[in-house]
Image (tube, rainbow, N blue to C red; front, top):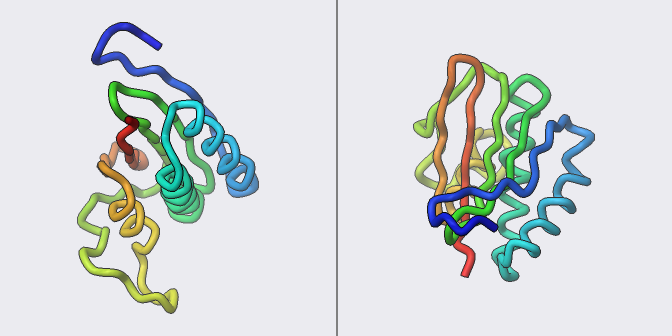
Length: 135
């Protein structure tokens, strides 16, 4: 770990597709434990990663890039894709339909269970970043 308070330590950088998501869940859980994220927050972190990664594959061009980093006081996950892009406005304020008819459940859940969520559309694709405090 760096001694600089604003430093970020990249723990994992991985390109992924649909078939890579199940082993990626296990890998992220291991790194979250290493970074000091306690249970049950660690499980929530993996659920959030899964939701955003699946979104990237389904709506963002079939693949994505995950960067897992330890920042001062947080474990942060950034997932970027090359899809058509979107903004935070697509995330519903209320729980979306549970019967599968309404989009946005994964991002809604991610916002609910994490400490910080940002969505940054780029010229091609979007980067979704979420983080949880590490005590």
